[in-house]
Length: 262
Image (cartoon, rainbow, N blue to C red):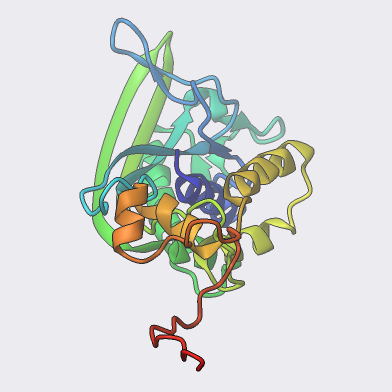
């Protein structure tokens, strides 16, 4: 439903790539990256330490009339995990590490997750990280940050994981027909997205842009944004006079009676 929600998730993923101990293994809504089996045990199919980013529950209580574009408070989840199967053994020294210099022990797993959690916050608030700046521009502030950890043993494979739930106040979506300014939140996102070269990604971007494209008549955009019915538009003097072209712009109304000739 929300274009801003999609943009925030993509921007967060791009902002984190290469900026934490998991490297480029930052996943966009990867289903199954971290799962709980029927017996309550954790498992993951990832072959190396990862971060997976999701947009979760949201709630808007600031909508106006019947509008559908408000986003309100939205939960963005960052799930990170490392397992014993991610440990690599140096064939020459026999040393097993999950990261150069970090051994594959339980305490090292927890340490790594703590560092990655810190790195997520650093990356998303980095003024020199252009994708982080795009991400921050899509919301008005952090409403809440919650952190949780878990660990387990699935099929003899030890796993440690953490989750950060970031609740942000997302800006409202532009209504269909709204012309985006270059410095608008989504305008900046689309401009930055031009740097990404991926056919599937560009199909997604084109679909997002198509949801905004449409009539540019200001009165119709206003009607869509607030869900106004015709009688309300008429009462607010926002609709065009009957019989007028839909794109006519009313700049002045002369109420003086015409001069009567002889």
